[in-house]
Structures are given as structure tokens and as C-alpha cells.
Image (cartoon, rainbow, N blue to C red; front, side, top):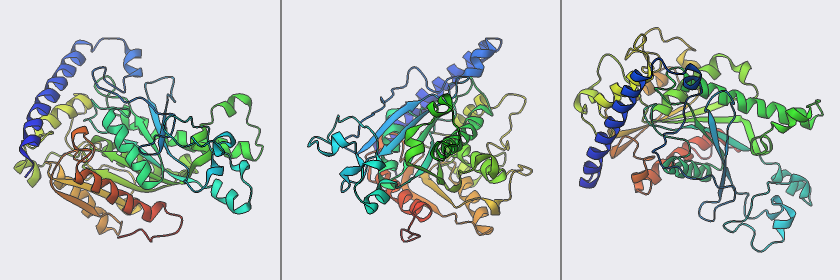
Length: 410
């Protein structure tokens, strides 16, 4: 069972969350006839949520740099990109001024990017041209709270970038009720298209494809220079898992529009699934820790309009009849993380079982004595379970992002 401290914190967490959701519902009802343009732009972060500043330099603690981008002038969609440090045995990957600087790599040293042309041997050049897999991460928060730059999400993404040696793109999708379904899901698709565009622009500039000055200026160097779009993994946390699964289905259904991006795997961490027919865990854990069933229902009512509200909505229930999309057998390998004391666990396990029935690699990692968001909520980030979960994700993910093969498998 969770500790007494977790139980007490959970009570206050649920009270505060429910109050916030009710306030948002009241504000949405009062502003139903408000400015449509403002509603379309939306918000991706609540003003009362603490955020972590981007770190353009490699941190001495984790060796990961980060920066923020606003990629859509028509909405609040934003990104925070995390780039792990170059290997310590290859100082030539750094800017020439840093290669001879004894302070290079220390905290506060400015990041100037990798310079593949600054190498002195073919072997070094091959190392300098190494490409990192791209992990697209969607944060949790019931579609109505949370942020890609919150302190907890920032710390989690840094951990993933370090453990997986991958570029992490944390998506700041639009939140409900300002932007209801399908805004957040469309934002996820838009980000995958943006990554594909970056790869195509980078390729055009390399082969002299006539990219004009304006086009060249839109190239994001961290993605274009160091990202490998052919090794892309979607990772969703709580409601972010619903978005990740939606985007994966779109990528499978119409792969051409995302070329050269290839989704090789997805990770669903305690997905925010629900349905009209309650599962055993939804009955047994209806008043579970942090996110109980009544709070989940309120969050779904804020995301879905009254006209389309249904617990078997395609965004809510992955196994709902008539959901559409590609056959499950076409889905990429899917790792599902569930917590023992989470009311949503059974439906996530059922989805994983359906994937395994059609021979998709879809393991479930079930963590004992844990609650919803046990590996991503700020109060749990330093616990052994959170650390072990991140390591387990990295081990499984490297089966599909490693260039050497499957030597990292269990």
C-alpha cells in the first residue's frame, strides 16, 4: 500500500484538482459567447503552475540542454527540446573554442552545437555525424492542466533524454476547455509533421535543393543536425498517452504525409482511458489516489463538448466499437506502464492484450504499491519506483532505437 504521506498528499491533490476543474468549467460556461479567435489560439500552460526555465547550456547534473520553440503562430502550440551532451570521449564534437577550453562541459558553459567539419579523422567524422533518435513526449494533466515546461515534466524529459541518449521533444499542446477536442490531438499530429518538415528542409539544404533564405531560417538546428526521424518514439503520460496513441494511428494510417518520420515504437504511461462499461479496477478503485473516477469524468466533460460527450468516444476508449483507424496489427511495438492503485489500469492492460493477440510486441510493466503518475509527478520523481520506471522504459525502447540491434532487450 502507498505510504501515509502519499495518502495525505493525495487527498489534498484531489481537492485542489477538483476545485480547479470546477472553476474552469464555470469559466467555460460563462465565456461560451466570448472571443472565438482567442479560444482558437488557446493556452498551453496555466498561470498558476510553476514552470522550469529552459537551459541552453549543458547542465553539470544531467548533461542535457533544452530550449523552447513556438512553432505555430496561429495557436499556443509550443515545444521544449532536450538535447543530451556529446560523448565525453569526443571533445572534437564541441565548438573549437570549447575543445581547448578546460572549462568546457562545466555548468553554465554555453552550447554552440556540434561541428562535424571540425574533426581530424574519418573515424572521428563518423562519430560526429551520429544521429540521435527522437522521442516525442506528451505530458499529463487530464487535458486541462499540466505543461511541457513544468518542473516535473522538465525533470522527467531530461531523465529520458539521458537514459535513452535521445532528443526529446516535449509538446505543449493546447488545453481544454479553451481548446476542446480535437485541438490537443491535432497539435500532436502537427508536431510530427513539423519534425518531418525539419528533416526535409535539412536534406534540401545539404543537396542544394534551392531552399531560399526564409526557408533556411526555419530549420531547427538541433533536430536537423542531430535528429534521426527514422527512429521516432511517441511517449505519452496519462492523457498524453491518449494523444500519443492517436498520433501513432495517424502515422500508421497515412505514413506518406509524415515522411521521412517513422514511428518505430510508442510508450503509454498509465493512459487516461475510460469507457461506458466499467472495468473491475474502475469499480474497485473508483476513489483511487490522485485521479478518481469522478475527477476523470469531469476532465472528460471539459475536453468533449456536450454534443459529442461519450465515454466510448474514440479519444477515450481505444477499444470502442467502430473507432476506426488502422487495424491493430499495423500498430508499432507498444510498451504500457500501469500502477497497482490506479483505477484506469485494467483498460490499459486490455488494450495491450488486444495488441498482443495480433502479434504486436506490447508488454505491460505493472509497478506494485504505486499510484497514477508515480513516475512523473513532482513528489515521486526521486523515488526508487520512478527511477526504475525510467530505466525500464530506456531498456525496452533501445530494442527499437539502437542502431546495433536488439542487444538491449530483456
